[in-house]
Length: 467
Image (tube, rainbow, N blue to C red; front, top):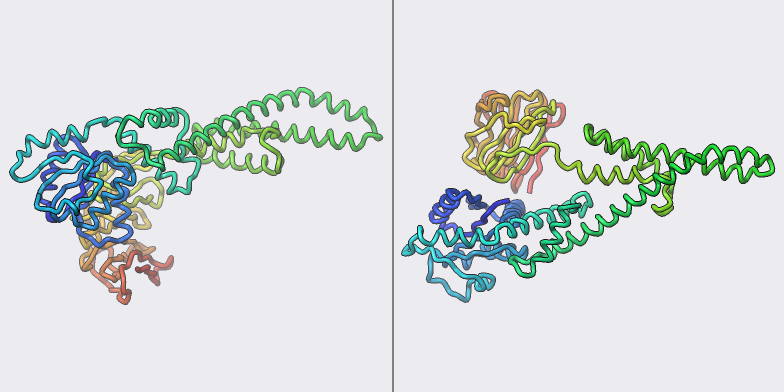
């Protein structure tokens, strides 16, 4: 999440750079699109994500920005998600009728050339910091609500426990504060409450089932004696009793496996998930269409839900100064390389999350980074029209692949690591020597951006994907 998203016209970039530097000096993180690139679906998705994950939307009003289609789309997206808007005037002489109506309800700050920046800037900081904790909570909740929707409304992304209680409390208090909750946030909280209530009912059912299993184990011996005494004339009754006994035994086993999976989750999360899944499958086969209240065991379901809710994150990699666009493991799984819009790629220890190397040198966004099959080198693809090869241990640049006339969107090694193929928005893919950086072949023919290129497992052919 960021503190401020700045929407502006390209003609005012010089002023926006000054504004960003001043905000940075006040420890305010900003999201700014410096790239004058075509309005593609991927580009617009990044803009939308930047707006959704920011606390305050600052709009620089000038004659150019008020008539800009993109700027007005950004305003509309901010309004859709109830973002707090702070309009600032940089240049006048615009037609008020062309100003987006959403801006008219707010007080404007004036940052014109004749205005004293040092006097006006503290007013902007004050506006950004007003009700900051509430605004941050609003942003966090929106990001989680949108993540839940983007993941197909998977229950594992819903709120639970204290997070849910805090969100409900914030929703109740929001009628007197700005920004107001969005429909996504309201629906997200409502669905979280439904899931939490269902979870509590499941816990109660699990406790009841455990109690019944303990009782069943105690009377198991008595049931066997009664079944024997019944004799041959009660074969039907005996069979029914045997089925009940078998179910009680199976229920006891599944109850123990569910509890064991929960205990195992503390040290072996993946293994615990597999154990809970197997127990859940056995339970499903046993109970078939019966309601949960009649299950002979409930801990496998409880274990599955608990593990799925809590297995989200093992290690967090923090250090990039902008959006992380791509991440991939080394062949041995011990390292991770990330590519970011802060013009760097970074290498991390996959277990501890410690940064091992920073790959610096690109002059544009790094869109992709991947390891050579032996893990000793990394190739990166960048908006600066180059791909580069690095030593994965030291972060030293080994080769620069120059020749594309547009953004390099993707780069990957051949299976033997001797060649690299790159994909670009100049409508070509190219093959390079990974050691010298010399271009070996140019793959021409596509009439649109080449977004991906990769080698066949034997390295003899390449497949490309294009717009």
